Image (cartoon, rainbow, N blue to C red; front, side, top):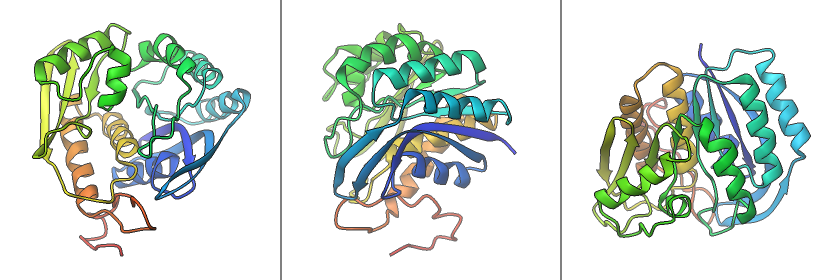
Length: 270
């Protein structure tokens, strides 16, 4: 059994954050563990409140897991503020996980800011150099690269990815879900070997809550199991596309993706 740790915030509706990570871990054949950084009050309509945990308890959770259990990969999601980023960076520098996937969660789908602007510098200087794979969406990649990317072509996205790699991250996967292409969603992977594009049809789907969290946690699970980076990206993108295609109509807003569609034998949840 491979063991994967998620360091992220809690989503009270169960669609994103720690809850989505645990579902993606289970669906992709690994044992999931958690370090909670923040508690959010949210539902399918959006985030209404956030309470950030003390950095001491965040660090203590990390130490408790690593001191007792083999960790094959770490996924990082919502960190919320500079003190949490510093606590996580210090702890991971001590424990040195073999795989670190960092999802730079900055803004919720509803537009609610999940990372304080002053904390972005700490994210770049303290955590990005430790990351094996960074998974920003286009708005996050714009912030990290300082470039306008909303309507950018592959060449411009690759330049942005190269700029982000200058922070020390080993690879970056810029997700295309926020692009203006009406036909397809193309993610571009940039590392020392070059750039590769992974495409999928753009789905006209309402229920997409937790897609970013679930993609990064799926990548962590597959990399922990020993898949190559390209194969992990290909399989993770296929898994998320299936989850979106069979999203769950939960609540009155944007419901979650279906993490267990294949495991349930293709059964829809309604």
